[in-house]
Image 1: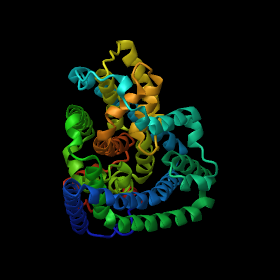
Image 2 (image 1 turned 60 degrees about the horizontal axis):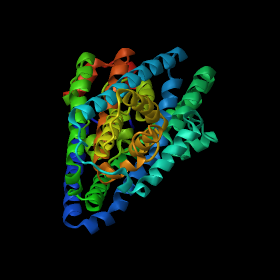
Image 3 (image 1 turned 90 degrees about the vertical axis):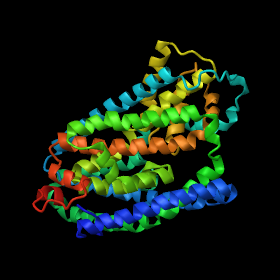
Image 4 (image 1 turned 120 degrees about the vertical axis):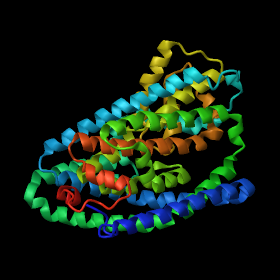
Length: 442
């Protein structure tokens, strides 16, 4: 199903509209950097613009996920297909999320970004990270499974937790599939509602340049570009590692799946700029669902893989976690043995899932990991608090690209990918006139 506002629009016009938004967001980011740098107080005052746009997008994330997942599952011929897609998706997530943790650990050991700082942990201000540590502690104590289950079904749509929305949507879709033909009228209503919601998304995206401008102005004005100088090696190492992971690891995955990672990045350039400006991959979640369907991935697969990937396929966050932990250990003169690093890896694998969907998930997940690995002081997080916002942007970009790749790969495994449509879309060409109707209307 394509969003109502774009479904009948010619390909060349869609490309022109996307290109126009891309330029607007790019200009907005540059202006935001300039305002934040030269007039920092003004930049900080513009924070409501970025926050307001994020809230607008988050307002529609729950209905987008709910409607996409429910209609996708309810439209499947057999429930066994749901289980098969979910199994393949989670196998992919587990493998590449773990690989990302290993990559961060390996790079941290090789480059030693924190070595030589010789910081006494007793001199660190633990109060700066107290709130993050408390949230992480509550997250792990409450229990991951209990957090997935909402108090009521409507609460899942209003609580802002992606996992809860996904949980209720999957159960509802399965129930409708079991009911069968008698659920057809409700399915028709939900499919019509999907058109309305995606039209709403298109309207909200017109405010993307304003949101990106405000968010970037605040980031630079509040933390200043000069803050990067003190921890330049860590930030540069993280950005370079993430870039290599995307271009080399995910690039090879794309090559085996039959597409170019560079063409995919070009196809998603508007969304990536939006993620960069807002420092949040959630800002582009609705657009990612839309674009993956347009690129030839079957709607039912997109509806399962994209939302679950936002919680379980966090490549950028995982690289950050192990790399940042090693940086803190090295900066405070703490040597981690092979056994302690293995423990760190195991804890990170669990905490990266347990803290999913929490605001500031990357920093909170790091706090959760450090709280279980006592050799590294949680107070050490104060060392990177000033530059975490800059690294958050890279985390979000890597997570976003990783989920786009996962969607295409799982669709390919499932036989739910129109390769001709994918190649035409990524190449910017007119879509095939005789595309598989299953991909148009599924």
